[in-house]
Image (cartoon, rainbow, N blue to C red; front, side):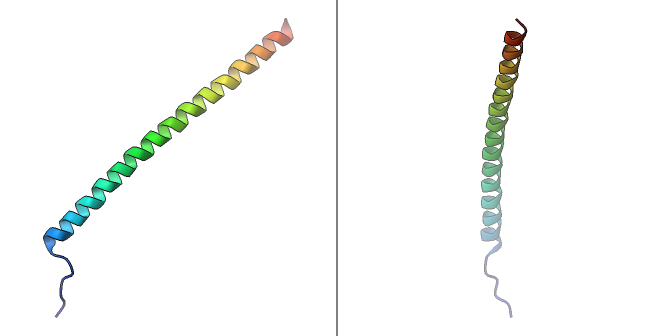
Length: 60
């Protein structure tokens, strides 16, 4: 006879706990991804601005 290691209630609570921590990780990951995208956009904008300023200086 097999003895269940967890009751149904404990198993449901464990699943809910895993789902909650996964949701928190997803939110943190999305915030991290958004900050990386923002920094990269600013970096690329700075490079474009510097290239345009250099070309304007070169032409004048």
